[in-house]
Length: 330
Ligand code: DAH
Image (cartoon, rainbow, N blue to C red):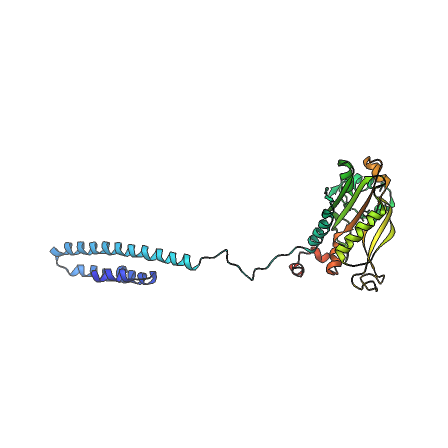
C-alpha cells in the first residue's frame, strides 16, 4: 500500500500520473488483481479482507485526486508563463501604413491656404440646380453646362459637379469679407485615363469691399501656391472662360517632366494646365445679394496635382484599392 502511494506521489507529470492511474485503478490494474484474490479467501475472513481493500482503494483515490490537482495547476501555470505575449514588444516587421496620395496632396493644399488665414468650408455632395449652376451664372440652357456631365436624381437633385456651389452657400450664410477654400469630392459622368466619376477639388474664394481685390492679388497668391506644390516651375496665366468669373484664366506650369522642352505628358507644349481662376462675375454676387464687393475665385483638381507630383499614369488606379499602389507611397 505504501509502495502504491509512493508511485502516485512521485509522478511528476500528468502523463506519468495517467500511466500510474492505469497501473493501479485500471481493469487489469493492481487493485483489480487484489479483488480477484477475494474468491480464494475463506468465508470468515472474506468480509474483513474486502473492507480493507475498499478502504485502501478510497484512500489511494484521494491521494491520486490531490496529486492530479497539483500537477494540473502546475501545468496551467507553466502554460501561462510560456505562452504569454508581451504586447508592448516592438516588432520591427510590422508595416507602417501610409496616406493615400490624394489625401496627402489634399492635406498639403489645405495646409498652404490655412496658413494664409483661409477658412475651410464644406457643403453637401447632393446639390440642387440653384447652387451648382444657376447662382454661378450658369442658367438653364447655358451651353457651358455641357462642360460638365452631371449625375441627376429623379427629383431634380444632382451630385455636385464642382466645389464651386460651396462659394454660393458660404456667401449666402456669411457677410463679406470672405476668405475661404472648399475641399471635397465632386462627381461627373467621365471615365478614362485622366478622369474618374468621383474626384476631388479645392475651390477658393476671396471677397472684400469693391476695389480692394485685384487680379494681381490672385496672381501672386496662385504663383506662390504653385511653387509650394511643384517647386521652381514657370507659371503662366492664359485667358479663358468660366461663367462664374470675368475675366477668367487657366493657369499652366512649365512641364515638370521635360522642364518645358516638350514631351508626351505635356503634349509637346512644354506646359501643364493645373487650375482655373478669375475675378468673380458680378452676376454671382447679384445671385447671393452682395453689393459693392469684389473678389477672386479659383478651382483645382486634387487628383491632377497628385498625378503630376507622383507621376501616376492612370488616374483610375488611385481608386482601385490595390494595396500595391499605396505601398509605393510609404
Ligand atoms: N468650377 C470649375 C470646374 O469645376 C473650376 C473653377 C474654375 C473654379 C475657375 C473657380 C474658378 O472658382 O474661378 O471646372
